[in-house]
Length: 236
Ligand code: UDP
Picture 1 (cartoon, rainbow, N blue to C red):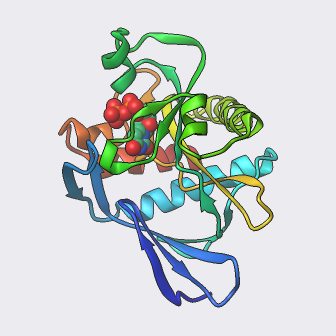
Picture 2: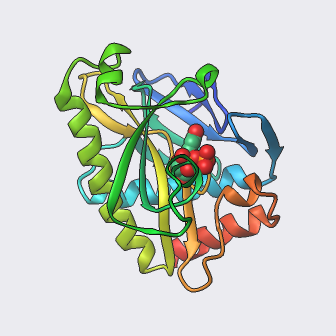
């Protein structure tokens, strides 16, 4: 399968059309951004690591019956995926408090939640991706159906249950993660985008060492080593 035309370039990936209708190629980039792209960087080899990690995790989810846009990994840095129309909501699920929830609600970093806390953020860079509720989703015209929003939440919870257990066996804590969903050509909502150390937080179960994009956000160094460690653990 070959790339025909670049359709879109995002912060972490480029999307290309192919000769097959409804099938795209996503290329994972080495670029890193944080704080609504105010901080920019580049880590050689990061694209490949995210491509491999994300592919592996989408394969696990597909095996557990979660419908996704993922079709297959083409090579080190490219996947084949179904074309979807992205729903402009970032669905964040949190198992442990850190990042924006600790700041916003004054919750001690590291507090373990009794259940996965699901939140919606409006995907809008100009507004800085504000947190939104169900009614905001409706007045923003994202959907007029409560059942769509309930579906996003229930998928996020199912995915959290699968991934949390999986990472636990790899001596990693799945602290929190962001998902994006899209509608396929039949209008069905399926999981899209990526699941990688750029979009999740992983802490080592024993030492709480951060093995994700917080290494870039907080200038902790060894970004690539951390992503390599995540890949090494999940494939072992
Ligand atoms: N996240 C993401 N993209 C975003 C915002 C957040 O992938 O635009 C992920 C982030 O990596 C973390 C989770 O969503 O795993 C929760 O992030 P949080 O709201 O704490 O944001 P931050 O502290 O990065 O501002």
